[in-house]
Length: 380
Ligand SMILES: *Cc1c(COP(=O)(O)O)cnc(C)c1O
Image (cartoon, rainbow, N blue to C red; front, top):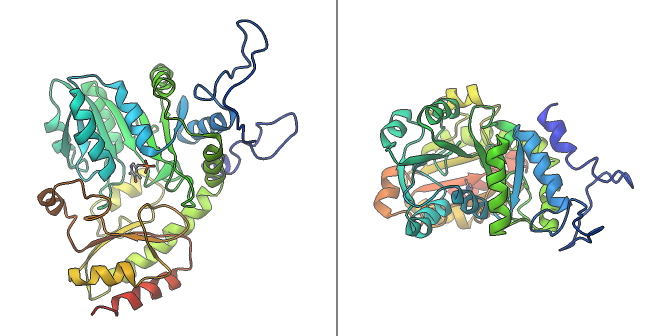
């Protein structure tokens, strides 16, 4: 079944007793046991909750995995997954990584004997060279943040199989609607559900889909043991968001392309990073492995003095962190999302003091462009 259909109908057949079209919010911490040593299948909401389960099963179907898991946030999902590794293990990781993931790895998990090497994961040779005898995992973003580099998921998965590495793909920027990492060979797909999946800037969530059931058992063990699970209200909001994922993303991508072309032609813009533009280095690869280019744009202004007017004088576009929602947002990665990466490293990666990131929403594209145009003209 097409993923747009699966997304729209998530949770549909859950309540057969009443026939409710949407899944009920099971706002309960615990469940009565029918008898000694008996269970309805639900005992305690950390271990399993029907609303959360509807989301987890829906995600597993959309991503083609054995099982899905929902966490309180994307970071909770990543932290819980990293419990699959043990002290002494080494992971190879995308270098222009989401800042929060970098912070978790370098300021928290490294204290427990995990080590990480950061490479350009759009360069398979760089990944290959970073693998050591103690390497156990490869953690990549399918589309990186903020520079939108594209990793060749199938080639990296083949490499992981050959070297016995667990392949985890943070697919937040594309979602299963546009790219399905497990189909390309990855072991685990992971999402900040806060972004496109929920899609309305109204809730936080983290989602994981595991391809094989033996690995899924381990992930479930940690989900329950750690307990950073998604609550039933937020699970419901995430389900509600997923139902419109396909139409939102179609519109967002259409808008993003128009805006990227407009920015590329603007005399005050030095560089535009949008994989939907044919001159983007990941364009061809993404065309092959995904069904779209997403709706994130990064662009570098010629003069850093333009950064402030663009952040503060835009009004249709909000100056706010996060991405993927129906409302367009603009951010300044060097100071907001990537502040935990050292300044020299940021500069080397291209996360300069003139780089802005745009999360394109579903508003009218001409309104968004007019908003940017007036902000560009307000430089003082
Ligand atoms: C936002 C984000 C995360 C973290 O998710 P939260 O829901 O904010 O905890 C992880 N990876 C990527 C790519 C993100 O954009």
